[in-house]
Image 1 (spheres, helix red, strand yellow):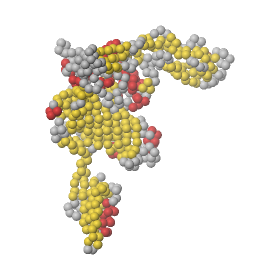
Image 2 (cartoon, rainbow over the protein chains, first blue to last red):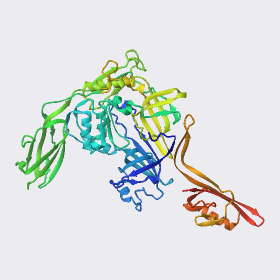
Image 3 (spheres, chains in turn yellow, orange):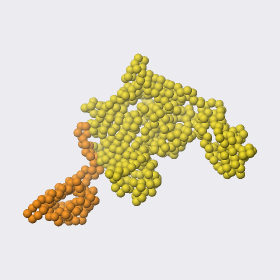
Image 4 (cartoon, helix red, strand yellow):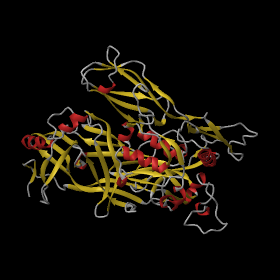
Length: 489
Length: 113
């Protein structure tokens, strides 16, 4: 790594895309910066319905001339700050070692901001590229038998994240049915990835990453140590155990679904009136998500009449846009009379769900005792609609059980900041006085820059994550075909 | 060479003028004592002092010393001209009675911007 020298000449580059087109260099005004990467313990991402927290950053800027104040009409960027109040403006930050390397630390958007009259500065609180996805609510058609990564591609395309801005592993499982109904794209992407123990996040360069559970054995950054923390390059190391979240029983819920026969999925409750020449759009929310819907036929599915009850269906154009759980219908009255849509029914083949099923697994060797004889401490994972098969639930429950049955060894290291180290990287910790010579995975990075670029790394010991040494597992196209390796799950 | 601050020639400060460098960055020691240093650059600093200033000399110096904005500074060793800020917190002004009237001892520090 190019930032590992004990003595580092550092510079920085802070850029903001005020006009949405060109980056403006704001580096000279930067007073300090800080950020957090990966704020959820990684075991909580296994199947859980809790989305990965986006990476965040805070930048404090000199504002003596009120450059960033959105009410200052004399500011050269007033046109942009006043229009947006700085909300949702792209921003990126890099650390530079002159003549050595430039490494991006953060890519995202301004979320909230504010000034300090006393300190004459302005603070920007920013969220990574998940920011627009958190605001974006979308509806889709019903997708059948999509592999996890295929469904993520569908959603990424939906919000304009093209192939060049994403890097997805091949998913391990096929989700029988998936759809969005005015739901947050970010939340759904997380649940889709977590349904097979994977994770999605935006990295420091702003690219959308999906890593499957298989990445623990195949991704170089998780199989090869990316950095060694030594007594000569850290300020302190703390070694807490995470005893609080130890369980001897795990329960993963899954929701089987199937397509049933044709039924009525929508019935309008009140007449829709259409003035002559008028176009109206009506959102018809279906009682259940539908695999298919029938074409609309006059007098079978709808009745359109004038005030006297005479048929006006020939004067009204009906244009439906069909999603899984809603149909958006545009009515256009091309005639000269007031038209009433007195009845409008939608029939189709709905997706029906069986009662939620449980997959329960005990850990007799748990640190909190055997559930057969001792108190039961249960970890329940539910509410993820993309866990639909017993195979998904079995896979998740086994992985989860092995990661929560014993107390997890955590290392909290204060040291120099290294921009290339990210959550999920494998690292080594060697400190003889504390008796440490271990490898682990970074869960969380808290970095700060104000003269020095420092960071706190929260690391989980690899023996608290993998049951066996990583070289013991069989990896396709890597391991020899013999009996010396173990199956992962 | 003349010492100037803000375009004003000041009485020559007392010797020696203490010059120094400021590290813009931090230096900390790792667990085993290794020095870890991150720095952006270095800047210059001068500590100036005068004794037995007349009231007129004092007024000239204090006018420049109390200017909170950036000023041009030429140190007495003619090492060049630098844009500096006076560290206003460092200003010390001590009047004392002498046979010919009130005299002043003044000192302060300027730092390269």
